[in-house]
Image (cartoon, rainbow over all chains, first blue to last red; front, side):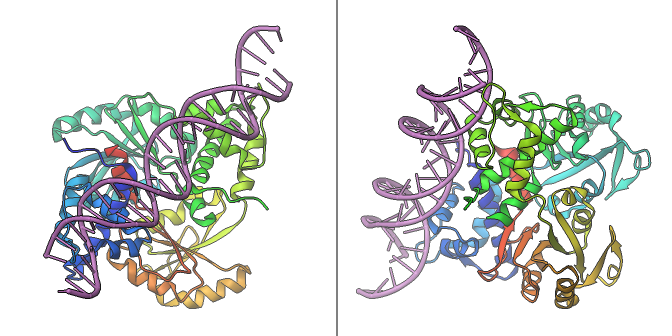
Length: 209
Length: 209
DNA sequence: TAGATTGTTAATCGATTAACAATC
DNA sequence: TAGATTGTTAATCGATTAACAATC
């Protein structure tokens, strides 16, 4: 049994993966823990410890083989496992995320968008249809049949004042994870996990520290 | 001299602020550390400790006065201090962030966007003009005169493969902070601070843990 | 009063950094 | 060989949680 990777290590490993993609682009074959650590301004033993979690190993005196390490990280973090999501709120941010090509690169597929604005219903965003939020239950079960995969992730991009109400509507669906981009703290049952993207908090942390 | 608030506390305080905004909307006058902690599923002494950093105090047996605590957090985190930013990359995400009203609520003002696509140059996004990236130096100094405030923040929303090159162009400007939304790790001089928003890392952390 | 809640100190826990033997 | 680098253990640091006296 492989042991779980702590959240902080997951985030760092994703950054290592960005660096390794760059190595591929530039035909760099090997990279050392010190080089990675230098780019991220962290400790090199941190890097080696994180890498050890991915069941791969480097070579003394040489470092890690970039392509191999990249694959190991993809495996460990499940980049290749397809994940399906709904976007709740087809405003500027919601539509931008639906069009965001990076998500596809990392296995996240946007299945549909939902909104309440009649002008938006039935429009397409990057080939995905916008449905009225009242259709959530219906689509949720239909998509289940079509993909043979439940949609368990909701990306919440409604205005802050509407966030709690939207979260409550999600209880009708098969959603288990809410990725919350709104400036609101949600109150949901224990079986639903919420991740607060908290853009303003990140921003303030960044400029104040 | 007020002591600096640690990054993790800044992020939590921002979440408390969201909750307090909700209290205002619902005319709730008082809130206890236990109530806040319950919503965020954290420890109540954590909440009290964070609040203590904001030079305000609650009342035994009653909790905190919501409006007062909200103000104290705004003061401590500098929500009212205006901050100006450029957006580098007027693609979907860049344009969405330029239109994002939440930023304005927290004092972040987008002054201009930059891109290389001729079709985008001179268009307006939410009333802000898109300039060619080659104009960066010029606009950077001009805005300085107009606002009597340097633009020190760049929000980087170009494709990952273009990120490093864009970051290097920023060295010509007065930018001190790069809020990096791209899937790339940047290599910049020590006097520039980079915050990796790392959306994919956040997402993977969330779904794997 | 009894019960609830703050503010803060002490204890615990986890994450980061230092150190170094093993290796090529 | 000498120098560089990994993998891992031990030491340090910081953040979270527990506990409780003070207070209303």
